[in-house]
Image 1 (cartoon, helix red, strand yellow):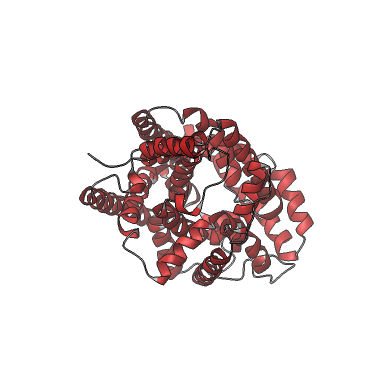
Image 2: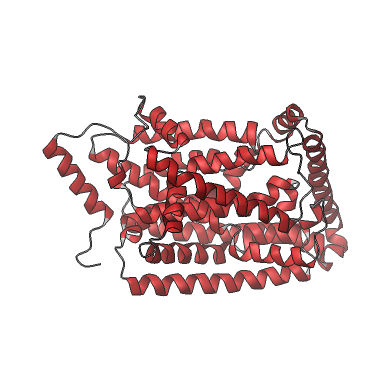
Length: 436
């Protein structure tokens, strides 16, 4: 990294520049200040998140991890597609998004500090994101991540002035600790409920309680399914508020030991120059392909084991949240390294459209949730529970195509995506021009 310009150095240069020119007014990021690798990765991630979430949009929420909850047939082809999704998509796209969110927190503060602002601007910005998340969760879709990104972002803000090495080490140790803890906590229910261990007399009561919890979760899912299919939108919202009103708090607690470390890693990697060409290409390719291949092979082994168990409820829960965590980290870091390394060389029309989708990722993420309401809810097209896994993936492809179709021409005419513009205006308390 000798002679490389890191983001920390760039921030000091920007501060010096604003001091000389007197352009220290607080303002949003300009086009020339963007880091294109972040936009590219964000574009891939926002489309990948839809691929991960499409089952929960179009089938009962429990079907996301438990194929027996599908309302359509889930045959051998769907089983193999589930394994493929588990290996390639699940947790990896969310992990990339989280990594980038951490990098974005520091990038925003770096430019805010350079223009004379304080971290209260960031806290206010996160509070607005929290409001978006509340609206998304309670009125649109229960799979929201914005709310707990905002809450956990509050915890990251005080850590932004740590040294980059401290952030990196804390992130790595914290992630491994969380992975071990999640695995330990979720392996026991699997062993009790779905293996011969639970047949032993001393575990009979625990096994009964574990199976009752599964039955209760599936019964609740059935209630929601009937409300969605009947087109009772008010009933869906009422059920979400009465039965799952506190779920966002639970999500923060459940995913904190994944999300906090990944955000810290994103901050540290950004500061070390990872996203801006600060690492030698040979190392980026080596680390990227090694992490991607080893992580994918480990996940494939877990996927084959899950298939051999018949995709049991608690086996799937343990695999998704616990067992796959370390392979997830390897793949997330590997994918990020490879995208940074190769994105600069990918300059065709499709690549530019991916970058545009990434620049409008906030609009694409929330817009997808709204679009899926019209596709699946009973009061609209009513396709909830009607499409098989392959057909749901077709919906994903069409929707990703829509993201690629609108984002680039929009951003050629306007400075920001619609929701990006709204978020900026609320963050700075003023109306910015949106047209170019």
